[in-house]
Image (cartoon, rainbow, N blue to C red; front, side, top):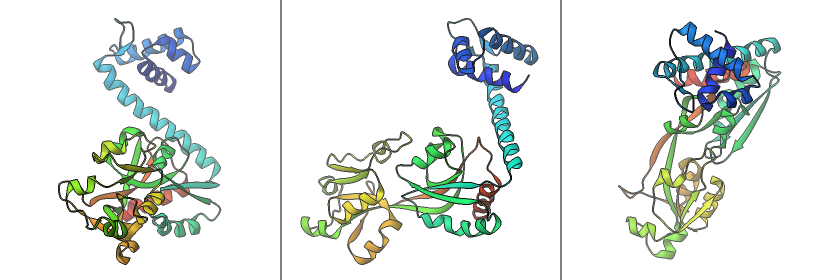
Length: 296
């Protein structure tokens, strides 16, 4: 058994075809077939059912593959770590945050990071529509902070730790309340008004599927800052992070709405996120450890 044999098994399981696996791995079909037979000989049982048109994992093969994939992840981490150790601290790290979060959440960690790793350049980038999740998954950034829901795990192999609360509230502009003559207190009153909401999220999640609000009158914005400006202009009502509108609530330009059983405040968490498949360099690992210690 070696890493290449496990990679071959993983690819065949994903494609169901020796030919497609050979094309992806730039190997011959016979080489892949021999590797699978060698794995099966060492395991002592069949990994694939070859009776059909496509190769399918046996029940034992499915269990074997789960462990094999963990070995492959560990191997990738080990390779990354070896490279990091050869090079020393990273020349730069890239930190990402979703625009719905407070970028200041990075600040409590960065001061220590600059002291401990003065030669490492720190890049901080903002994203909308949860693109930060995709960038972590694709290795474009080292760490990210964004609102977290458990369902996001299906979009990547993530490790996360909570770092701050995240409150979503329903608001309406004082100017709109004055224009319609009353603050909405029922479901129907609210649905008669335009709803302001974000566009579908970059990770492929439909906002409608999450909110499940039947309002037909709606304006979609591709970032939360634009949504806030539309709210302040009295263009409709919407759900928005509380920290982004707190001054306007205190000043009376916006009002919070709560209609039990329909729309009301939602309490979530902001998480720091990393890829579980990649090893962080010393500087990024230090920042991650700070977050874990803060959480603990």
